Length: 220
Image (cartoon, rainbow, N blue to C red; front, top):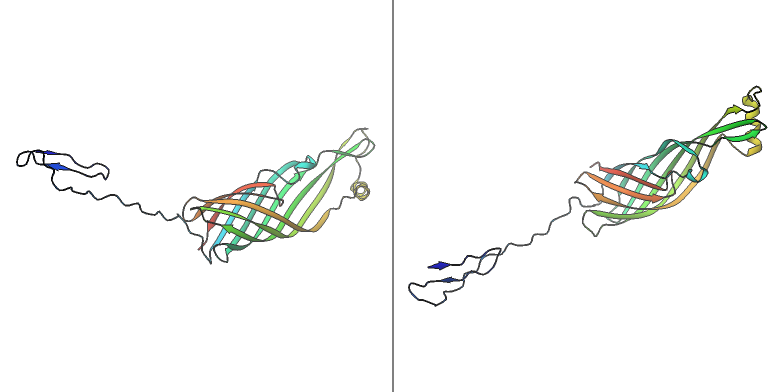
């Protein structure tokens, strides 16, 4: 007797050459492996709370040729109203230092800007692709800058300018030490599910940084 076994879910035919040579016996069907739908590692549902942290790669003060002292950092939280809509809040901070500028004959100075952004962020989400979340929205809030100037060089070798002189010069240059202004900008990004608790995300917007990457953590 020669038996031909099925491999990988094919049909197996058996022949009994001893009793009925050349006659094919009834086909024996081998059960096929069923294709099982794999659920996403994490589903986006109503009532989820996420904490997020990100770092900016392109500071908003890059165009001013400022030197970055502390890179743009963001912390925030997000609540899922449902699968498609969310509301969140974020706080960002960066510290940068301007290039030396001449404020008087022979006197150079720099300014350090500690910049904060506080925003409320409604968002829209598209989650049709498993483990991916494409999102966008806008942020509305406040910008705050704390600016401190410092005389760094006196080319002529005379006595350094006093703080009073620098304050007066800042007035002529239109530099204010404390600046509070409204903030409104759009953003768009994408998140990828690493596991049921963690996501990685990348985002483009005009907040504390033009481009940022970070992680999100599910709190509930």
